[in-house]
Image (tube, rainbow, N blue to C red):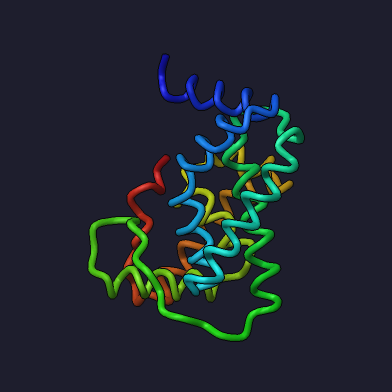
Length: 178
């Protein structure tokens, strides 16, 4: 059984109230959830709180997942909504962590995180889903409720904005052809 099939089976079991399967899914995606939350809230404790709230909300609403292959997208959507809730309440900003986008220095990672936080919400959401979660463009379009061409436009404009903010450096170029 390949990994994708295994993952889909875990999601199906979780939808059918198998708590062990749900726990396995969360363990598989916890680091990615944390890093994504940190990109948004820039604070370790808030990121942990967001992940915890996301796991709780996902657990109580797992039955709403219609297509097991979209589980990660569904989970990320919950996470992003929780991040925005925290950001609306938040006033303090803490230290940043590294995010492994490409092999580069810690300073470049910090610059990238800072630059992402200054993008328009639409651009940031699409960039995070595409580059950090490897969500295909078609799935992003469906997930956010926009057209595929709009996703492509947001990716292009978001990358251009990042490039401007980062002094011409393009940290996300490696995946742009996918």
